[in-house]
Image (cartoon, rainbow, N blue to C red):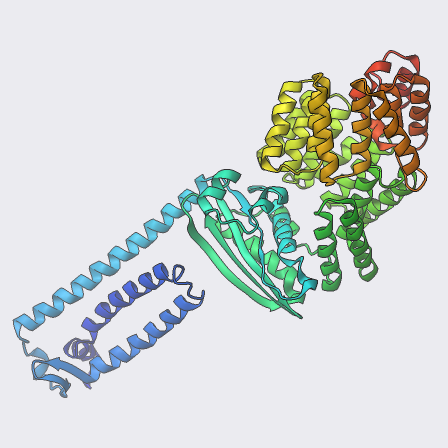
Length: 592
């Protein structure tokens, strides 16, 4: 070792330590870039790059030590000799010095070039992410669980991530009904992205074994099929809410979205601290999404069990209220018995959390279809949308509410808003067809309903609405054919499909078949609730107006939710000038 500090630099140069460092650094930089490129195609774990970095750092220390001790000579590897003061000034052979200089300078140029490329490449990526619309679809997560008890897990995680991303205003998130068609699909990312009109896809898998859970997720730029980010979240089931929160925040980070304090608060808000209650809620929502009467009722049981475990679980109250609303609207439950219960549930949810958009929607529905409180309902719908602008259900139901009031221009604007958020949403597409039907634009209604059936030929009530459109176009054969298709599918509530088919038969002059439907409904009414409005439709079509008004009076007394359509429902066209009908409109605050 030199005995003076200022000679240390000369000794490092003599022992070629200074020359080894930039050459090693250049090689290490190239290795890291190569690992970064091949990691995803080869399916290497996320920690691979970190491991290689640690190994290269260790290698650098070893290289420095070896270069201090040893030297490469024409005779091979030799131990570096101890220097003397005079030997510092010895001149090395020109060829050897030139070789090291070339290697050193080349390494510096390589490092600089890679740094510039990396920096500008990331900047280009940053700019592109900022300029591309942040439209995103969460594809159905694959369920890797073995137990039948966890059959709901993949779909449930998909739903929950969608709901989390809804809270980020900068994102346009496709709904569950749009993405579920890609479950087990073999289509490529660019194909799915084009069909859903999104720039980004989030996909992954979920696995649960006892108390352990493993969520794998990756974010893909759909048009190019480029992998943007991926991560595996292993943990305990008790951590599932934290995992979902971290996922949503990470997606926002990767897409360069700056979350507002309000958005951050919404994302980090946990619906419950009890994971058992949360699991029951997920099962309830899973059955609810099957959209059949039996499954909705099964979902209601899970919601109730979740509330029993956690009495402060606002989302479970809102889900149960929504289920009561749906079954009451479609005539499966007596509204006099169920809407008051739904109201209590919605108010309880809002008492726990008044920022819950779903609870405001549930209350808005009750105020419209049971209270006939049009101003109160509109206020709740607008509050729900202000709290969660991406809530497609709120936009859809608000649009239908506006149709009830014959505010067609506003309704069209609201429906289009929902469709802009989710162009392939089946419910919204069907509702748009129903909107044109009520507006008496039958050609446009037919076109829209056929478009919906092209997306899903078995989607509930679409054939029925198309049949009603054909009925208004005096195409009786086609009308009855479509209504028969609806009855055979049995995807919705068969009672109302039966009533619609009876109405169609009566309007087409098939009075015998019309009376047969009346008798069937009378028989069914002995054992279950059949809304009075169904009988009113049939009797008016059969030109038995006294009986028709008798049942309209009963519908008014029991707060039949279908009576809310009285202002624009075609079924009442034959009696609109009757003073009794005008009086009914006034009592419901629907008169012009």
